[in-house]
Length: 297
Ligand code: CAA
Image 1 (cartoon, rainbow, N blue to C red):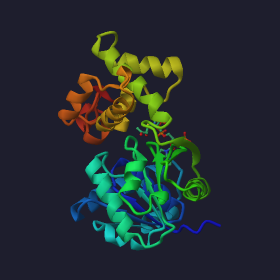
Image 2 (cartoon, rainbow, N blue to C red; image 1 turned 90 degrees about the horizontal axis):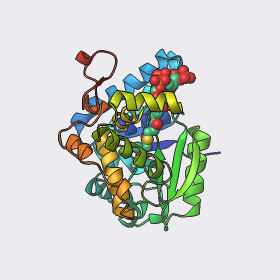
Image 3 (cartoon, rainbow, N blue to C red; image 1 turned 180 degrees about the horizontal axis):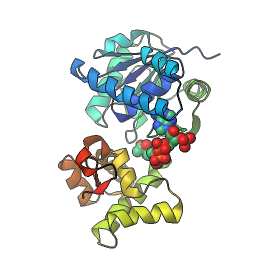
Image 4 (cartoon, rainbow, N blue to C red; image 1 turned 120 degrees about the vertical axis):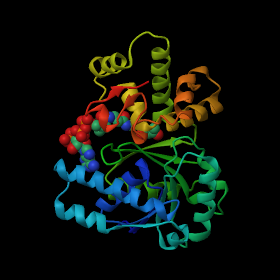
């Protein structure tokens, strides 16, 4: 039987909130760390909204919704993670933040067998392991957005990750969270993003070349390839800043042109047009834009 009952999630953005929800719905005690006390309300609201959606769509009974909410608590102090048995870091894709978080987790998490996972989509797992005295316990646990809906987790072991850590993590995400796992090496992009990101970047380059409109490129991939979303809808869902960070990581590792971030992507990130989470990306999600997405770029 799985011994893991107390989980810590670092960050309560799109991915952190999704992870907290999936863990709470699996019956675990979840402690979510936000960057400062003022961020708790926004984190909780994100969680409540998603639980409400699940209830509305008939995926969650009202009593289970309440129970899940009761299992999640918040802190702005990572020292409260002392008793956690499995931690998933889902903070911003910024090197200094991630290194700080892992160095702190190493000091505060008391259980030497605890797994320290990261949801990073672009940062080498070995670098996170190296700032700790327990690199064997550090592993990439890469979930997909929306976490509540998509079944995949990429498990990414660094050259120092112990096999026991990978086995424990795999048993936990499959047996307790009900996800499915693929194992991948600690290389930029892992499996999914190494294939997905060049496709998304190609869509931006195609749009910049004037070949077709945003809406038609999305329509083409939805109707022609049965993708649930077109590339621009998907970039907006992932977040333009995240797509840029992964693109830079892939380009930095392989120096291949098709991984390099197109200028339009960089300009939009500079302008704060980060996609759905900021209210506008390639499409406009502001309430005034109506219920359907309106091309904004
Ligand atoms: N809890 C449980 N189930 C939920 C839910 C929740 N909070 N919210 C929605 N669902 C369920 C719905 O009930 C529905 O299930 P059924 O089909 O059984 O009814 C299903 O999820 C789809 O939801 P909707 O009907 O509301 O929405 P949709 O059909 O428009 O689908 C979408 C929306 C799930 C986002 C779909 O378009 C999709 O899968 N898109 C692709 C997303 C994708 O590729 N994500 C990966 C991004 S890459 C990444 O994340 C990694 C990275 O590092 C960048």
